[in-house]
Image (cartoon, rainbow, N blue to C red; front, top):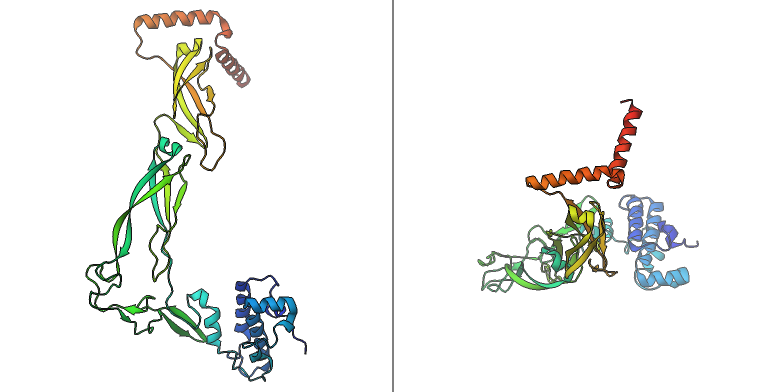
Length: 385
């Protein structure tokens, strides 16, 4: 009888990932494995077919040969293929028990390492350091020295965690593998050993200096190059400067989180800087020039006659050059007309004379005020007031 296509057997597409193939096989194994279907020859045959398809499609070389030449490319291609091909209905020497099958396929889910077991190295965790900068520092960039805690091998026990003169002993629970196999019904699941927590060893006499941890906490100094133009929320990654790994694993990374402090004059929005510039009532009416600050000096700002409060003036290229590239932003000055306070009697008298002279000119001196009053009058008339 002609063999069915292995992808069809498992019910997956030809571009299916290894994870998809494993998932499909688990589903079929749960349904057809002989341990769950004793005496059912049809289920047994379907399981053999699925297991053979699984073995081929999870082996990169065999899968490549199968994709190129079909069954001819993999038939009789060594151990693992003939175990299902020519045996009779009861021949399961190559299939393994239900627990073994699922121990292998579920290994990556439950933290196991297949049948091999053994300890695994573990990458160190990533760390975060919050770095506060002034606006000037963030815009210009700088090199900063930071100090942060770090774990290093205990010099008294050379990182073993055992009292000097003694050594850690092989864990009696897992035999030094760091993992134990738990039987739950027809499942066999590998888990981290609860006795040694995956290290494969137990310490009977811990080092008094590090309390058996094998490492102590110290401080280290790092140099961080802050690029020009960073802003609040930006991160700088220092590879390998995080927490050290366990069992020989690589260290994690350190992420320096930027926080730009509030500035007394400027606020930043993307590449632009904003500031409020108070001007006198006379300057607003007659016009003039003001000296305004920038992050790299001073500039003269021309105020035209009749300037109203809230007017925006743009000073080109006096903002920020973004850290990720792009044009330099602008400085945008918003003028705020300041009302005089603590006036003398003579000053009040002069202002009253000025107000009277302005009113004689009608709406041409205060166009916005007259336009607003006309609108209010029309509104009241519509309301019948």
